[in-house]
Structures are given as structure tokens and as C-alpha cells.
Length: 323
Image (cartoon, rainbow, N blue to C red):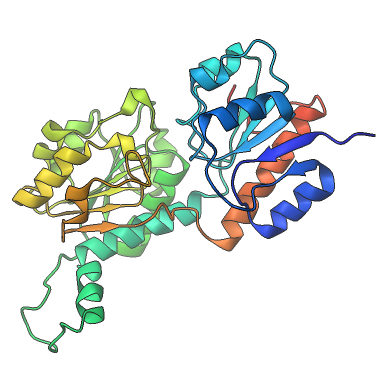
């Protein structure tokens, strides 16, 4: 019997690629070069399933097709702002994602960024590697204490809650939470968190702000120049959500002028291209989208996609259907 054809747009963990080759007629991408829009559109006509990542922009122009062969876009990741889900629905293509399995590792990285920027670890490492360190002295690279401070979390879903647990129980932080839907009282009580009715209030009261809200047009520049101006001058912004959530021009200006203490960013608007002004900010820690980048998590993400795609192609309802 002919096996379903699945096309994988980027290199995936070798163990997952082996499973794909065993269970499907798998078309892999050994060069790991990002697909262009015309490649994605062609794939819709040649594959039964496309296993996609954040680097693949499935917009309306790509998905505008009457009868595509592809039945499902199995997204390797939680966020799906790179996929026009309304256009996918019109084309009759299901979309799935991979919730749950990357929450812990992304939360770990958010805390990594928080500690790095507060304690000026990026600056210190650059100094050591450049041979500029002259030895210990009382006034060298003085940073900010993390323990006991107030952390505001925008987007209190699985990842935001995982960050809250680490911050509250590990560092004794006071947690402020803001979410687009009401947060259950029991969820807040777990970390003794206070729900903020609006983002502006949270920004004004927080020493650290960590973003865990969805991307896409709805939240583009959610944190803009006006909102950055509400933050304390010695506060820190952490973004492991999506790059477009932050107005990076406004952020760079705030960092350069000293109206914000610092920023830790794992995601960027238009990545892998990074705003040059951000690259020149010493009070910014910049990481290359490493939120879920552990062996265990990337394997589980891949296998979650495999299960979703198998269900769709077998006519079953997948566990992680978006549309």
C-alpha cells in the first residue's frame, strides 16, 4: 500500500526523521535551507502533509488554492502566527501544533534571560573573552538583585505559569499576571499571584516583565513606545514569545536613552534579521530563538507532530487541532 507523502521543511532531530522515514514516504530537507513561498505552494500540491516550522510563512497567497493535496500542516511549535489559519480553513487544510511539551524548557530560558540581563552576564562574558577583565573590584558590573522582586507576566498560559512557579518558589518573586481570558482563582493561588486588569497597570508595577502572549496581527507591537515609557527606569523586559509583540525600534531607543534597565530577547521581528540598533545595545541579551532547544523537548515536539499527522491522515481527530 502506498504510504502518505509528508514533506519536512527543515532538518528535524535525527531520531524523529528516522520515525518519519519508517512510517511515511518522507521528503526531508538535508540542506536545512528555508523554503521560499513558491516551494511551499508547490508542496501543497505534492504532499499529503507538510511538517512546518516558524520559518515557513503560510500566508493567504501561498494557501489560496482550490483543491490542495495537503490535508494538514503539522506545525513544529506552539505558536502559529506564521500560518494564516483562516486561509488554511478556506483551503480545507487542517493545522495542528505542539502544546505542553515545550513549556518547561521555554520557561527555563525566560529565567535564563532574566538572570543574565539583571546580573549583566552577557557583558561580563564579552569582557572576559575579549581579554578586558582586570580582576575583581567592588564597583565592577553592578547589576540588579532578582530575588524578592516583582515579576509581571503577560500571557498566563502554560508557559507563563511555568515561569511564575520558577520565579515564585525559586526566587521568592511577587507575581503579577495579565491574560486575555480570566485566570482561575486556583491557578493564581498556586503562586500567590495577583491578576492585573490591564497591561498598563502591570508594566508600571513590575521590576521584570516577561512576555508569553501569542503573536500575530492582534498583538503586533503590544509593547510599544507608550507602554515602554510606563515601565520603571530600572526595569527589565524579557521576550520569549514572538518578536512582533515588541516594537523593537522603540525598545532600542528606551535601552539607549536609559529609560529602561535592560532587555532579554530570544525572538525578533523578522528573524533571523535583527535590528542593528539592538545589536549595539550593551544592556540587551540576545539569543537565537533557543526557547525549546533541548534534546528532550525537540524530540517530543517532533513526535507530537508525527502523532497529529498520523491521526489526520487516518481520518481521526488530532489531539492538537487549531483549525
